[in-house]
Length: 206
Image (cartoon, rainbow, N blue to C red; front, side):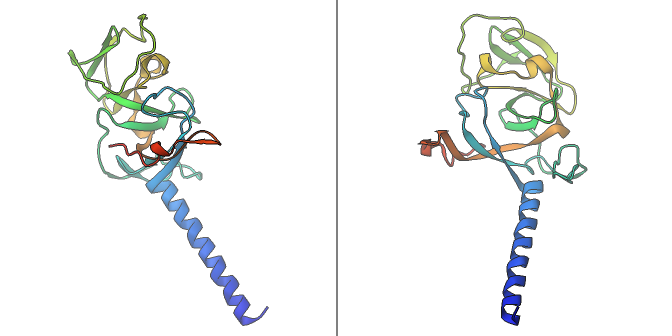
């Protein structure tokens, strides 16, 4: 191998290594990609939406596993607090190998109650223009729940598709350290390979 080809090979290898390191850093500390597999967040999120989730919206953490999972990792800095209305990705409490996405409804210390599908926080009904209701009958837990006081350091989450979401009403609140990140933007969306939803691409979440 000539000196020129050797240098070219070394430059290419260095570029690949740098790209991989950057990808690892971005994956661990900046953003992570997620795909929406179910209709629990309709109409806000559609099946087939692909999201980027900000991993530093609330905390900067060291990876806790070799797979760059930062949940349960040591907190280096707190960058914010989850707020009501935030759409978050978190480790499913009943099976932490799964990631769930829901909306934050109840904050630590707040008392949450559902009466005939209406959500009350500390006794006051809240406005939820993002929700859909596909069934008009009422059932215990799903439509009439609580009152329940959210423990410190935990968050009560629900899907926007209230009759089609398995959420904190059944398995309880989410611990802060189990939050992966906050929904940032839809970078791709399709109903099928031949049906790309271009109008959804670039949708931002605040």
